[in-house]
Figure 1 (tube, rainbow, N blue to C red):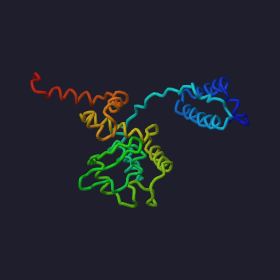
Figure 2: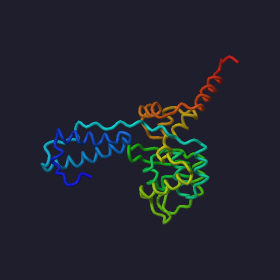
Figure 3: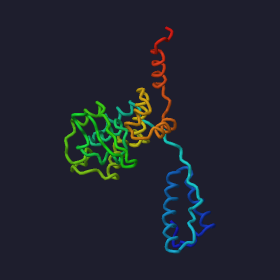
Length: 249
């Protein structure tokens, strides 16, 4: 991309201007632009370490702002996906994502010993936060787990019974999404979907946090930032108001 240009050409201030302009070419794709910024930072940090640069030109170059993603799955989209997906492991992955509110990496690493069928719980430690959780198993997910043969150590396995690599899982997930005609929806949207459904069911912030693993403060931030105010929430709120003792009929 940059030919044989020597690293010293990135010396500030000219190098900082170049990196700033390059990254801002991706203003319409901020995540990609920020990815390039991170690559520049790693390369220039190494050049600084071996005395090829006097300072890191990425310092002072701001990241591109990204809008928080608010997409979530409707029940109709869920039904479409499950009806068209003929990949049983991808179906199970969907159920785990939608009904545990956990991240993709934690679900791919989840082993059968974490599932206590008698207590109907999934015990896990989140890789990102280190939070330890004991998540009750939703009856819809329980039905999927009960009919899934144990082919390997992990709950989610490839056809040969081995744990999924993330890139291979995403390839199969992508195929299922396109087959269902739901391009634009992502696996990580399932975590947000679970939060939406828990809130719609009338769960409190502490109750939601006990399942998702977020702190109470972070849970409130997420609900404020990501949670759409749906008609179902409004109906639930009005029903609670109407059922309160002393309400005039």
